[in-house]
Every structure is written in C-alpha cells, then in structure tokens.
Amino acid sequence: MSNIASASTIYTFHVENPDLLESVSTFSVLIPAGYSIDPAYLTTTPGIVVMTGVFGFIGFPPLGSLKVKTTTTSGLFNVYAYVPGELPVGTATVVPPTLTTPGAINGLLTILVNGIYVDLTISVVNPSTPGVYTWGPNTATPAGGGPTVNMDPRLNFTNQVEIIAPTGEPVGGYVLPADKLPVLAPYILLTGLIGLIGVVSVVYTATRRRRT
Image (cartoon, rainbow, N blue to C red; front, top):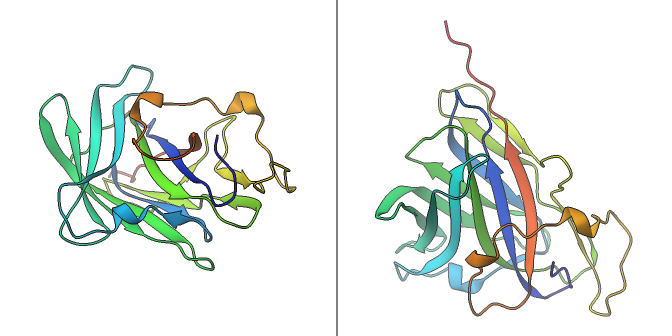
C-alpha cells in the first residue's frame, strides 16, 4: 500500500450488497480533506477512461468489467459495464476535496441488481500532512425506498488510512496489520500512475422498506 505523504496512489474500493431482496439506487463515498484528485479526471473532453473495475455476484469470480468515462461536464462521468458488450449502468460525480473540506464520489445506478459486489479503482494524491484519514461516512440508498443507510467496512477491514512521512517513519494513529490489506484486483491498475494499490473497503447492508 502506498501511504507516503504527497505520493500518487491508486485506491481500490470494494462495495458489496449482501441483501438479496433489495438493490442500491445511489451511493456516496466521502474523500477526506487533504487528498487531491488526479487532474485528468476533471476535463470536458468526453470518452476518456479514468477509472476501471470489475463486478460480480458475491462469492463468485467477476462477471464483467467496468469503465468510468469522462463527459463534456467536468466532474461528471458515465459508467459502463462490459459482459462483454458495452452497457450503460449509471453515472458518477466526483467533488474534489481541498486541504480543509472533504470531497465525495457520488453514484446513480440505472441497472439495479441484488447480491453483487464492485471493485473500482480511483487515482488520488495522498495528503501532505501525516496522520490517520477516514474515508467516511459512506451511504447508500435502497432502490425500493426508505431511509439512507450506512456503508461500513467489512470484518477485518477498515476505511482508515494512515499517511506517513516520506522518511517512512509512522506518525501515530491507527495502523492496519499488513495481513489485513490484501490486494483485491491487481489486474485493474490504471497505467502510468505512481505507487501501489491502497484498499478502502466498504459494505452496503440494505435496510428494506417495510412492505404492506
């Protein structure tokens, strides 16, 4: 995991919905203040692939791949699934963080499937100030209606990242043991970026709307 201050790195987000009766319509992931988004994401030139990923049913190998492409609006992206043909499955927006305010990755899904997982990569620049940074709170909205619910880390995972000084000396805070940081998808690295994969894992557990 590349967690050196000011280093470019790639985080892989693992999101899964274990509820077989309820799907997700929207989601929101907080980007902690201090991070920077790859400037290549914020363009008005459409069709550039800026994020990649895979998806499938929980407990099974990936069913297909994902590509997130730029549009003519800066910060707005179209999301496509490949199984193997291209299929539009939703949109996403990225609100860049600043040194003092957090940003966000928000998504709107147009094809709703229960019991799936998604691994998606995003390129960021780590904060310049060492410390512990929390990628959260993160939320999702059930497709069937009802209140927004939290997306929480899976067992033995965390949504916290400890950024250390370039000398490699840790600077306090929470440290995740190395054996709890498996690389989820090394074959979906974005090319031309510096650093290794960091893992930020969140799980969506749906709260179904009471049906009458």
